[in-house]
Amino acid sequence: MISDRHMRRVQIAELLTALHDHLQVVGIDSAGLALNPAATLSARGDVNVISVDPTSLPTHCSVAACYIAASSPPQILVSHDASAARRAFSILHEYAHHLRDVVPVVADVFWSMPDGGKAIEEDLADAFAAAILIPEPVRLESFEHGVTAAAVVRLSHISSGSREACCVAAASQLSTPGYVMLLDSNSTARFTARQGDELPIRRGTRQAATILATAAQGGRARGVDTPTFASGVTGQQMHVDAVLDGQYIFAVWTTDSPPWGGLSVPLDGRPTGHGGYCEACDVEFTAWTAPCQECGEPNCSRCGACACLPGSKPIPSIRNRMCDRCFLTLPVAAFAGDSPTCKDH
Image (cartoon, rainbow, N blue to C red):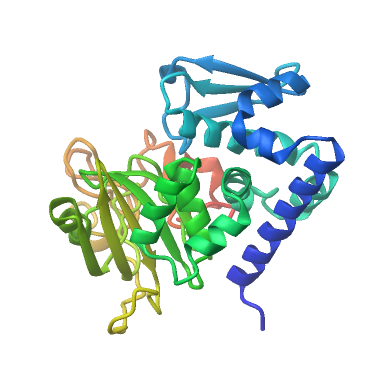
């Protein structure tokens, strides 16, 4: 039986091929697009690429740009203070969002999916940008001996692609589910590419893994640790290989068979939530949402109370809820009744 994660990988690969075929049909040279995405796309006129102040862009985005479909023609707004490599990756990522509705094959596949393609759209956009900036022969040669943090660093040095593009290229070569992460030296995730059906990790999420802190101090570290999601919940245990490169840390996370070898110990596949006790309900509980920013305590799964809110059933002022699958804070209408999982899952 073919697994869901294998189907996801195959589906993204097929859609990526459709996007590249479209470029050939409309006469867009991939090499020219990689060299100067802004000039190439603006010259065509189907989208306008506009340089903007970074404060005008959404703060939660993993790239330094956003796509405005409602404009005529549509606009790609890109931060003027990002590096040239990151600007290129961001523009190409957003151009893939534009092509989503332009390329019939992609539009039809998204239309047929229960969630309208939301589950794979960001990954497809990342894959498109990385494939343009890092040609397949370079990618294959770079990870011929496996995906390690050192291999990602080497690719970032020899390639004109951004660090983010190198992470995506590396994640595409992982043979098992996992992540390839770019972090600041204080272990805050700047960008995370994923493989398989692992949950996304939002930009700006502080990672508590001690291996990352060790790498920041000593340059390199390997072992077993757990990734942290935006809610503060930690995921399953993974094998981690981390390398400090200047002011950045590159980290490869994989569920099993780490390509850097060594003893592959059995890992705990269970995520860890926030344990709490509610005096109003007199119950202990596990919360999968972020703790209250005021008191630092999790909200009760029954009444919604924390240490600074009185217990009630329910609290009318709580209008949003964090999904225990995608870890996004959404309006209560996005959930079925008291379900902790949003309707998209």
